[in-house]
Length: 358
Image (cartoon, rainbow, N blue to C red; front, side):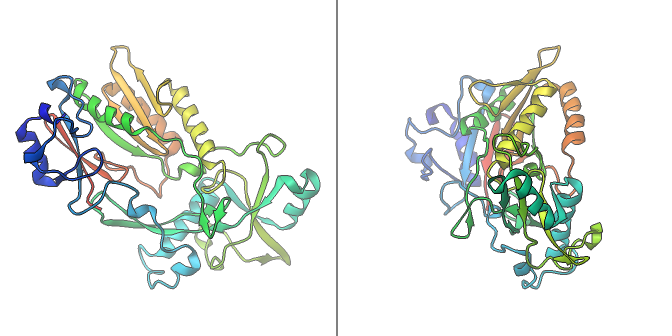
């Protein structure tokens, strides 16, 4: 509550950006209400400090960030932008994604069209699906809104309505839990927080067997504009090779599949439980463990972005090693230690300011 926050703390936050209440409305320091919460501002005692949500001047409440929008929706369209060739261009980003999907993960492969016909004969038409691959191209931005790189994402159009991909299941950390983790960083002696991201999370996970519940064989035609791609990886995307028509077969997880989020959540949960974490019963995307000295190590997972509160440095070292062995993905890099979901976390003493400049 605002009446438990010192005037100096509030003025310091106000000097950075405009303060907002829980409903996203701006307010003046002179008009503070006792019911106002400097979010999350749970302050049982001075050990926990205060965490603020700070909104950009003139902006609305924090929501979906611009880097989640893709104005370029295909490789063919990216070729027309004038930024196709050259270092950091869309071609380079497309080749990176092809290498990741077809080589690094092996979730999609190039097969003769006869493989689809054989699958229909063996398993029946109802168990064989033909989808389309869409290839959104977007610019990745940091918490200051600066473009850091171009990114191409191969996506299965499993759920399409009016040309737009519908939302699929995604296992998310609750907002209240994220705030709790921020407070624990301040309240646990010697604790620190890092933010980790799994590159290509929705390429992890296994398709259920074709004859099991939810199992199916999935094929897709070659997307337009791919005729000269794949050379870097020894691949050829000609629609006809050796006199045979060719298609793509999805054999693993791919973003956009109906069950992509569920496959990833099952994979990541299994990884954490095998490491020794306990899964919270109040928020199923919160996992925790303690070392032999009772020091805590906590992971909160928002799909593939993780907020990690570290009190046990020994467990942190073990976890980092296991993480790198399981989820190292060269085209992506770990988020900076103070960025999470497009928000910037700045800690000064016992105060954490959360801001967004996009």
